[in-house]
Length: 357
Ligand code: DAH
Image (cartoon, rainbow, N blue to C red; front, side, top):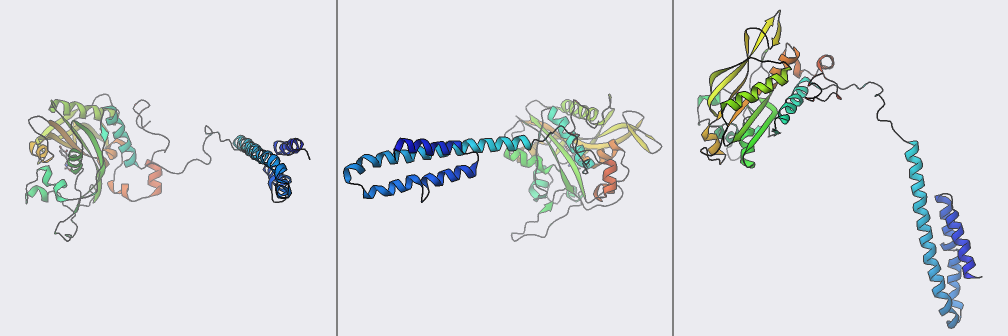
């Protein structure tokens, strides 16, 4: 048979294959064990050498071209198959969710998102550190002298000593992350650190695990005025009020000098607390200028670098903002409570659109 005719016929079958099964049938008919081309190639052995020398290259080239044609057809069919699937499996992501989504965002998570949003807008990064800490990061590097009573202030949960005699602990405050951050990053610094903290304390207003958010700013020319400005800006944004009255009271923390505690102005009306009005005061955080010893522990020269820090109870300000009367409910995992106070997962806090809607 004429090789050109054979090629036309076999190629026609390949190119005309309507689906993968037809293509496979065409391949087997040409190149399978008993395929037309295979049979011809088998016949080469019986030819005399002169004829074989002429026919063999033609058959080989035909085999290559057929192989290419099969591959081309295969990818064309695959493309069509994919297009058909894409057309039939479209999802309209703008359709409302059905049934209505069940999960809720815990008020603590919501408040952490809100705080991060506010400080991100002020140019702060969010940092994290381990819940299980060593004495150095939780106390020593924060300028707590050995055996100083301030260490006892914290009702620390200690682990049993390990082989080397070291006693790990559950961090009593997020201040430990100030140290970890400064050890691992070059100044200047501008971070907030939300996280879990632990103290052996439990009543109406204390739980053994609670949440804090730490703030740290280190630069060359930073002073208390900046601290005040940042905290005022935060309170206004967080409580979503035009004006917040704030009061800085002198205080003591080993890791700051000077130190202050901050109260915000509020009113207590029939058991309801309102921020931004009234003549009462409510303490919300501790703060101060970072102590030179803390900077030295982190390898910074206090004559060159200075800054401020603060630490605030997240659960506390969540209760204030959302009128939640009992702290313990935060940790009871009661779904009805979560439904009542919880936030919709798709309502992501954004300064532009209203933090909490
Ligand atoms: N770590 C303190 C506490 O848990 C809170 C605190 C006070 C943090 C002053 C600070 C600070 O960074 O400057 O009671």
